[in-house]
Length: 234
Image (cartoon, rainbow, N blue to C red; front, side, top):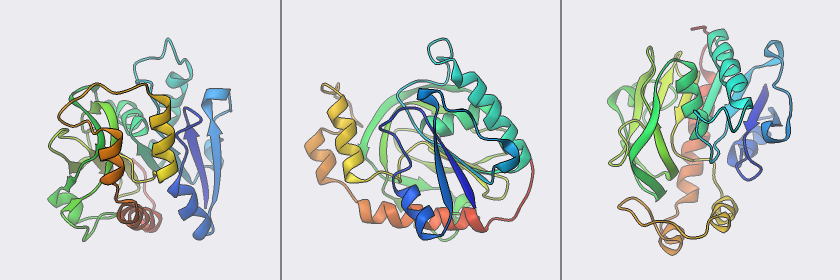
């Protein structure tokens, strides 16, 4: 299967998603929008992964490629392409589907548990997941659940942590299951301190709370479920 991964900054790549793809025999190509890479041809698109980034979906004046990317995501979803959005990527998916993206009441940075909804636990690709699972967060915005989608994940700090549609072929997650220790270290190196908050962990606490093996298993299970989801269109 051909997987195209849209990247918005150099330091937020596919991480464990690329490792999963290699093990499963899929081909993953990184599309670096920040350096001017062209969007893939929809005719060749089998799976779209949209990564995170520090920009907001409404900053088209500062990042003009966001508008074209949003249109492209809308077209790929309408075509029924498997689509996974991570953090900013999930927000772009929501916007492409007509849902609002706004500031969340709390910034969420660090390792905090999320709750799978009843609907998620009864459907692909989250069938029989534990109800409470770990996740790594780094966001200040949130999305509304698009029409036709179902909320699949929630947390104390953010009601809408994830949504799914098209029988599990399209998933948007506000958090990061794809990160490795080196990814988080790289993100921390780019910030000069963080304002405290009830859902903001200090770097030492962040490293102590890490559960990379667990989140890797959750990611792999979800990706396997998405890969097995039947074809469909919106």
